[in-house]
Image (cartoon, rainbow, N blue to C red; front, side):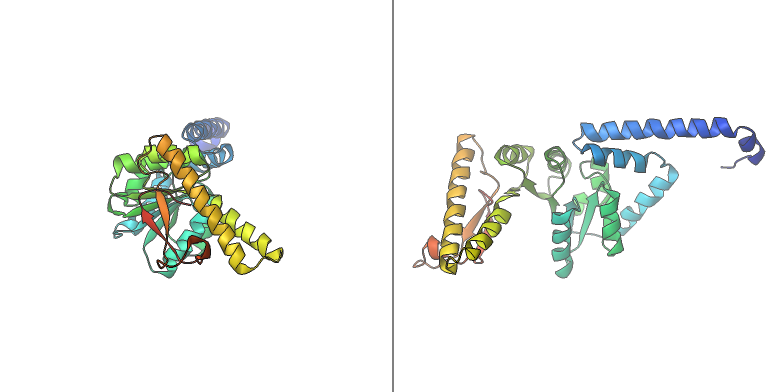
Length: 273
C-alpha cells in the first residue's frame, strides 16, 4: 500500500473529515454492540474508542496473544482482570499453573502486561477470542467480570462452544446464580458471603468475643445460609443447587460449632458459600 503525498496534502480537509467520520461511526457501533452483550456503558465506550482506529495493526496486536498461547495445554482462562481476577492470577503464578487472562479495560491489561503476565485485551464472551486463547485446550475458566450480563454471556459461550472447559463464576445474588447454572456453569460462588463473614468476624473480635465463639457464630451462619440456599434451589428445580458445596472436614467427634474455619474443602455437586 502506498500514499501519494501531493494528493494527500491537496485533499487534506476531505481526508481528515472522512477519517474522523469513519472513526466516530465505528466507535458508536462498537459501543452499541458492547451494551447489547452486557458490557457496562463506560467499558463499552472505552472499547469503542480503542478498537475504532484499528485496522491491520489490530490483527498484528492480537496475533501476539495467539502466538503466546499456541503451546498452552490444560491451562486456566481468567475472564476479567479486576481485583478478583488479579488475585487468582497471582495464586496461579505462585503455583506455576499456566493461565491466560482477558479483559476489555485497557488499564487492567496494562497492569497485567507491566507485571509480565499473559493478559490480553479481548471479549471473553466471544467465541473467536476464546478460540484464539486456546479454549479448546483449556481445563477451566474463572469468570469474574464486572456485570451479570457479561458473566452470563461468557458462561453460555464456553458451555456451548467449549464444553470441555469447567466454568467457575461469581454470582451477584441467588437469581443470578440460578441463571448462570442454567447457562451451564460448573460452579457458582456468591461474591458477597465470604467477605461479609470475614468482616463480621473482625467486628466480633473487636467486640471482645472469644475466638471460639466467633468461629462458632460464623460457622453457624454459614451452615444456615447454605441450608436456605439449598432449599431455594431445590424448590426452583435446580439440579446442582447453586453449583458447589463447602464440605467441613472434621472428625466424627467434632461438632460443626467447634469446627476450625480453615479446615474446609470444596467438592462438586451442590452449593458454594
